Image (cartoon, rainbow, N blue to C red; front, side):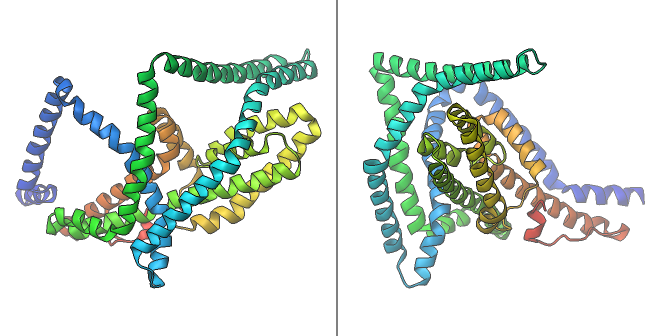
Length: 393
């Protein structure tokens, strides 16, 4: 009986396949160790990876954003190539109009805000010091304001230092501009062909996978695409909506630098929960320097926009395709922000969604295998695929 149990346990672990897997993992570890020891030989591979990763990520984001539009046009008898071309023509026209009309105004506002912000901080520091003089909160608040001032000074000095060094070394300027231009040029090209020939591209990837695993690969890929695509598309649309609503509100109550501040709000809105708090700080400082009444009006606009986002915009745009518990979001952002910086803050949730799909899939396979070998002792339930299984409701 003991031998039978032992045999069943070995079969459950995979039998000979387990031994093969362990050997393969050992060989993989040895190869990684060797690569680490002679990393200078494989430096060009790292350069190639760094070169293509930026355009690829941007292209995938654009693909997820515009693919539903192309699919809708295709359903209405418009060929994909014509639909994609029309979208790109409209985008180029909007970008050109934005550069001609909007950029000069924003540049003027940004220059004014950058020049005025240090004086705003000094005035705010004096206001807080006078108001909380001889109170327990005087020192902590003064330290907090000094910290914000130092951060802003460091950013300003860093930008100035970067450009001064860049002027001294033309190669640095050329390298930076070349890298940026490479991303801006290649990402739309990749996006164009992804939108035009997405079925051919994904069929090619699927044909590389051994036939035995294709159904599983299709299942995982479809779920990941649904989850990540919904999140990226939703966050971008939500950010645009929040930025526009904030600009309208700030403009109506006459908050200074409303254009620049609303862009900051829209950009930081891609970071759940933390982003709105970050964007509120400069808006609050600018409003306080006008008057306390302006701060109240700015705060009311802020709360109204956030309420509209939480109860109307986000539920309608995001739907139920990616539901993550708020506590999970905060933990993921803390971890990914520490590991990957700003990239982790922006893409931490999609990375978590991908990891969750993989872990859920692996656990589901484990339950199926357990039922196969140990089902006589009681079976796991819910081993079949269900999209609800991937939600954190």
